[in-house]
Length: 239
Image 1 (tube, rainbow, N blue to C red):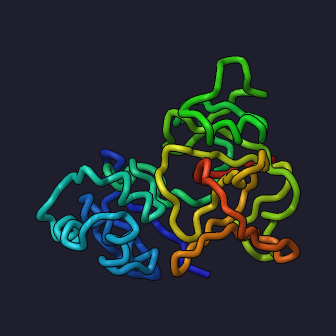
Image 2 (cartoon, rainbow, N blue to C red):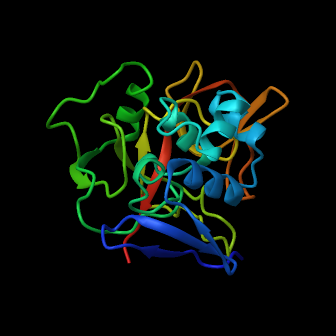
C-alpha cells in the first residue's frame, strides 16, 4: 500500500510541493507535475510518450522546462491518468482514477442515463436530448461536454475483498466519451460489435491484442470485438 500523498499549498491555493513516501518534490510547473505523476505511474519518458502519442523529446523538453504549456496537454494527462486541470494549474486532486465521493458541484451537471442510451453514444456524436435523463447529477471532476453517468449492474466489476477500486452493483460511474483512446488498465464502457450489448470492464491491451477484463474473477474476460464508448473518470457510491 502506498504512503498517502500530502499537498502543501501556498496562499493562492496552488499546489507547490507534493510528498510521497517521505520525499518532497517541487511541482510548481507543468513540467514538474508531469514528471512527478509519471514517477507515480512507473512510466519512463519513452513510455509516457508512447501512451500519449507524442515524441520522447516532447516529454523531456516539458520536464526540463524548455516547453511550458503543451498543446498535447490533454493527451499527456490522459496517459498519466491525471486530471488535466491539475497538470495545467496544480489545483484540485491529481489522480483522475481515484474514487469520487459526493461533494460540491465543481464540474456541472451530467445526465444519469440507461444502458441503452449508453450504447447510443457509440453511434452518434451527441444522441442525448434534454429530458431523457433519469436524473441530472453533479460531476465533481473535470470532464468533457458529453459526460454521462451510469448505474452499475451486476457484480462483474466487484473486486475481491481488500481492493479499494471496486464498483459494486448500484453505484454510479461517470463516463467521458471525449477522453480519446483508452490505455491499458483504463476502466471503460464498451459496446460489443454486432450486438446491442454494452458492458463496463477494464480495458486490456498487449502485443496488439485487446480484450475486456472483469474485476471479479468469477467472470470471464470478453475477447469479442468491441467499440469503446467512453472512459470511466470517477465513481459515486451511497454511504
